Length: 347
Image (cartoon, rainbow, N blue to C red; front, side, top):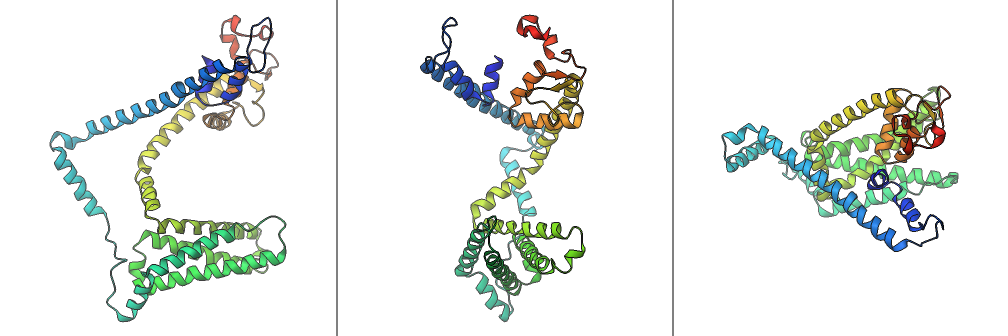
């Protein structure tokens, strides 16, 4: 059952399957692929039922019960019909959603020209091409590239930064300062442009002003990394991606609740792990970086286990440790199990 539980976490199940595929009579010993058909059928069926199906069923049941509990806690259900509840939800949306004024043409004559320019289909297509070319240029850097190539990429970066700055100016002239900053996407565009400008300033002052600062290179590197934020400008061009991001933002409160519960579980098991396995010094995986010596390191170790990265090695190290802090084998959890399940050298 322990082996099947390890397999249900999808951790090293091919290794176990191949071992079973070579299994044979005890008096003969393993033969390669002698039990291949049975092993393949057995393990594939178990993974479909014991891993994929049951895990999804478990998640589905939790989601269903959560929805039922949420409905029971909703006090409006005692007084309102489903139609009335939908009406209340719609009214809340109407009062919270802000009007989109980016498509309303301004009354000033000189602003109308810029407004028509930024709302022209070719303008959006041009910005899209600039973003894609910028993405390609960011991928061209490689190790040990020549100074001429680096300078050429820097000039290209200047051109793209200037294009984004021009877009920022045109939108301010076409929408006005107040209407421009109402939209969250416009605020993000402004952040990208300001980060690009700061990157250019840091790059120009790196040899003069920043050389007097100990953290000068690190500051310049941070602003250089901010170039990656230009990739998110693509999200603005695709409505489907915007819906996905909005869905993620709407689900953040629920995710925070789940994260708090997960942190509580990790915290409790970190203390238990420190109490039970603090004397395990070394094993196949447990060592200086992976251990239960204190609650902080135990927390990191449990986080690694939650990702499925060799978690069963850590489990077997607590059962059959290589060495213990006191130099004896008294720290083995095998001492709490029947002797027939443990190797003879444990005792």
